[in-house]
Image (tube, rainbow, N blue to C red; front, side, top):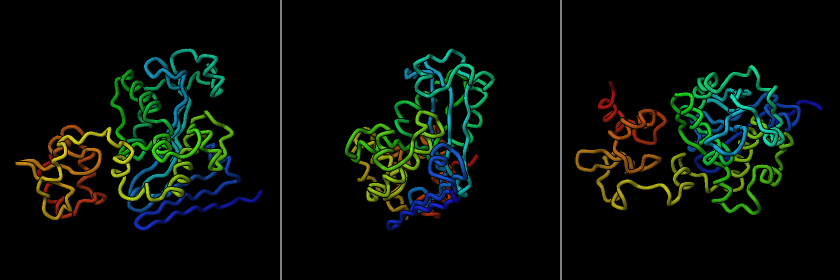
Length: 309
């Protein structure tokens, strides 16, 4: 079969998302083969590294089980490919039932290195990235956090975590919402399901397919999307009075004045002061004052120097 170039581009008002890949067949894309490039541009993904993330493990109890394989597949800010995947020695035997799911056996992971030998490379990709996964919030991310705790290292800090399972439920997509069922619904080949690279790649394609079908849900910024997915569960620390605070001039209401504090009025730190964000999440503050920020440049420059060391 001749090499094919499949270009899928979605463009709606202020944002667009393109997936470009050059491959022998779509099976190779989902399984991490061939050239894999994802270019996401526009208001929602512009300027971000975007990667699909998946883990295979020794079991489902995040408190007791261990990682045996991970994959991070996607695109960097400049559009270059990201394809980091590896087996991991779990420091325990892989149960027969788990091997039956993903096909990874004890002999496969000998010499693969334990988790602490891999976390450095994992963190380099995840930090400041948009991470996409299926059931990532309740499983993959919790598993990663606990493995980091065991290894005595800091958990990576992504810019955002997008869970396609949460999206499918939020949009009330008909049918069951398991990854395999959704992939079948949207025509995505997942014949090598339950291997980390296959699931990570398929999840990215699934996100694009859902965005194409439900474009209105994805308008706005990545913070708007996270707020929409969180719904009523995300608390506004200032309560309903946030809109009553005086806006910082030229900030379009994204920053508010509360006595001597400047309050962020959008995104994952909505309702928190710049001082609090600087103490707890300085990476976010760096982004807030960067050229990618939705806040007017002159406003960023006005407050940025207060937090420079």
